[in-house]
Length: 417
Image (cartoon, rainbow, N blue to C red):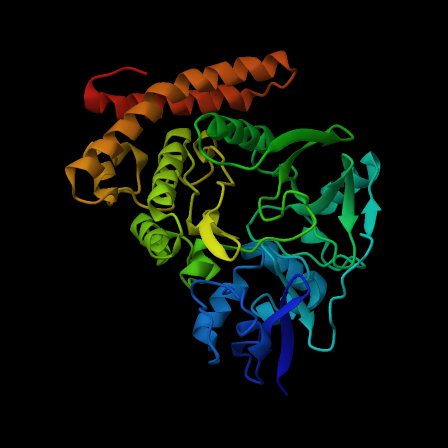
């Protein structure tokens, strides 16, 4: 017998996700939603329509709402379902996903709460939860906890209320994401914090971040960009794999995933400000290259829907992977046909832009500006953080990567950083 989940934006029914007896998924927009006058699509890959979308289109979108790889396996095992069954997982934990989507069993209707429902956490409680995330990702299986976040790293969605950490209950939206240290990646919290601050200073849009600690355990606290300014409502978003109908297991270009050109074409086709967003996307590509972030795949870029219209979302998951010898050096997306950073030269960068002199000149100017500015900024930030009592060996390692990458780039013009 087919099983059905209702898909909501806040308390507004958007459509029905159905799993048939053979496990195939389909999706149909709700007729009232389509005629509401302010309807917008779940995804660029699922345009508004009164026709039924089949498994090949539907499965990639909903699968990308779930954690990646081994994290998904651990969640599924805790829930007693198959990691290959996104419907079954979302049926249990799909109340609080990335963006504005919530999924409920067909017989349940989310009711607006006049008062928000939270469970406030003391420092010791938070420490205990963060320590157990590796065994219980997203607190899967915990009573009243129904959250799903994409990505391979363990994380926790929480609400920050009057500067206090809380788990949300019922339909209350979370406001922030907590990332604890990654067990096999030393100083990951300090690494990402440093890179996010540096990105902001280079005018790469990012969400506000800060380092906090729970019983001496450092963690990264990141404000969710997919929430309204008052944190009372969810904003819709989708990553570029969802937008392009690419399953999460194919997120890397060398495995069949999106290329930089695919992402630029997507922005050109759907963004309400394509010219600006393409520039911002290229700036993020440059920044990731210079900090040594080889893991900047298509799931790490997203559209944020503002009044139902897509814009490039702020950058996230900015981490210098190059400082860790155990991590792959192969870039997630090729630059001018090259996966190895050392093989990338000016002629490869200009292949990313249209074949016009203006576009090539702009690329050269932006590349030169980033490469000549970033090393000084990194040194300045490291000193500033040290004065604030935040120091980590990873800061020097990131600076060394940046210095090396920028020197490589500036050799095109016979310059030094």
